[in-house]
Image 1: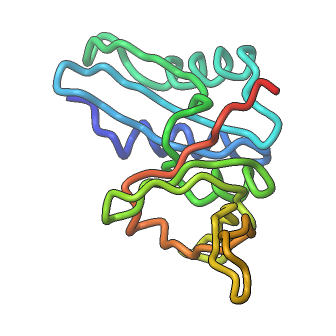
Image 2 (image 1 turned 180 degrees about the horizontal axis):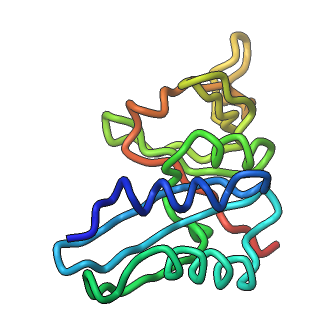
Length: 155
């Protein structure tokens, strides 16, 4: 079986001096290698091809047969690394917290493991009969939410 750390090291070598960042590397028991990269401005297919060739040139198919897939993290997929949160500041996201509650709002800020999402919520205002819609900030921790993902908006 191909060692995940070997593949990760190859990807990190290729990423040096590039604006791309590694999202995930998976190696299955049957040696299917899946590499996900991302970039603030999106991922170009030419760069995926270049990374794929870079990896293939450094792994020996005579040693072990493998299947290699290199691609982008994918819009609408849950975030896996902090850089993805940073890239989507100012964009609409969906968060499923540890208690199973969903929040939809704008990713306002990221600070280490914490991130803030501004959600429009109905809030009871003193002296008014009906609740009013107000922007409310919710702070979450990346390692405590079930997922956070970008909401694709076609408006």
